[in-house]
Image (tube, rainbow, N blue to C red; front, top):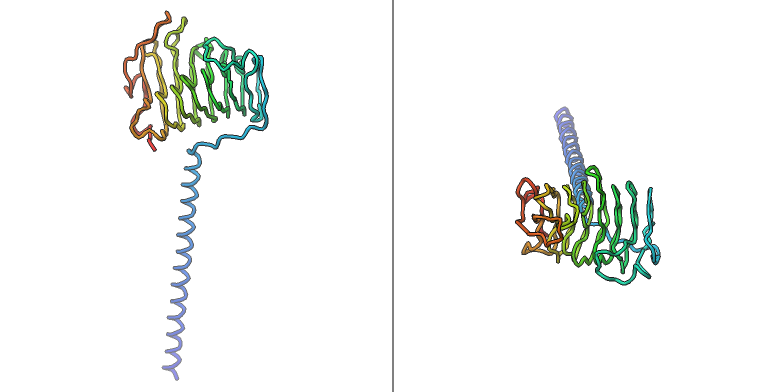
Length: 281
């Protein structure tokens, strides 16, 4: 009987150990699954953070026959604004009036700019352009015209399509930052004015953007005026032959002549980026 009792006790202990091992294995399995799921969620979140946002559906439309002048903050609530009358000829004239004119310090957000877009948006000084979408750029999406070296222009979110030449024209002085933006079918994303009658040193920073071919260049700067361009987290799509130039250097002038291109690519002084800052998909 003792032997049987001992035998039963040993069997019970072995069964207990088996149950503990099975339970531990199950717990580890669940923990591993949870960890894996967590990593996938985190990875998914990271992917979502860098993925281009979907183009918005306009909430309505408004024809604009005279420039809307903005001081303070203007929230378009994702309405589509397009040119009519004097702003509706759809031309490529550099001297056109804009759909919106932003005073120094103004904020324009949640706007869809339709076609015809006239000369897009003009910033007279520091400005913020947030979640603004250009369906068909035409001439320029936005021009930055402040004259202070301390002027700051910020483009955050949004996107632009169908720019025959430039998306952003940087005529003034100061610093332009573009982040979380997407662009497709364009000439240049941003160009520091190559032949304006008044020239300045201009600083450009581009980060976390999605670029879809066709396109010619992301940034054009004038080295003789001390311009710099910094590029980070640029994702280029549909350009396996790498025809889109990330950064192009020019010698600018103030007499209206066509500026001379002097080179392209990272140089550590004017075009500041490395190969790891640009990805091709």
